[in-house]
Image (cartoon, rainbow, N blue to C red):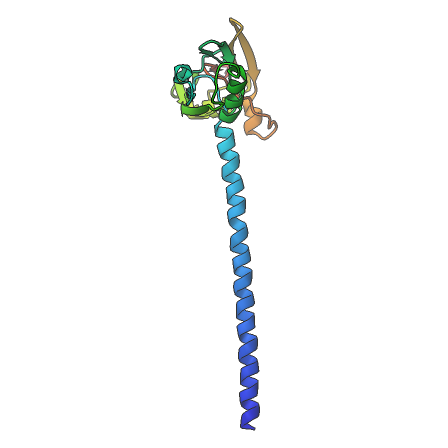
Amino acid sequence: MEMMKKTHLRVFATALGGAFLWVLGGCNTTMEAAPNVEKESVSEVSSESLVLMEGDVIEIVFPGAQELSSNQKIRRDGKITLTFVGEVDVTGLTSSELEEKLLELYDSQIVTKEVTVTLISSSFPVFVQGVVNAPGEIIFDRRITALEAVMKAGYDPKRANLKKVVVKRLEDGKYKNYSLNLQAVLDGKKDKPFYLKPSDMVIVPEKFVWK
């Protein structure tokens, strides 16, 4: 009888231990999967932040040809001026894409096929005028939408007419106006964002009130 009790206890202990190890194994699997999701999110953010735009300051280094190295500020037309090459359009490219482009441009002039492009600073100035709490220049460090600029400047919903917002943009030496209904975006009736470009002017008119 005593032997049977001991045998049952051993069987129970073995089963309990196996269940405990199975639970631990399940916990480990869950914890291993989580970092992969987080890593993908960080990678996506980093890739987006490396896209070059007007106003960015970049450092270009040719290890084998220091005379070609320089610091460049991307102009409003999206271009930089390089030695022996001239003007190059760089907006919309990532740092790695610009590196590939530079290697192609300087292929016949460099022996060491190596170049690094580093984003030193990013400046995204826009101007918000009209019926806002803080009119004037607002400087961001990333690409933004017209609605984000207005929200940053602040506005009075009773006075500001968000249905008639105008973005004034300099294109090819002339100012072009874009009419926006930002109220529709706030109301969820429109979800397509209008992205601003550096030095855009966002004008918020006042509501016309009958007296």
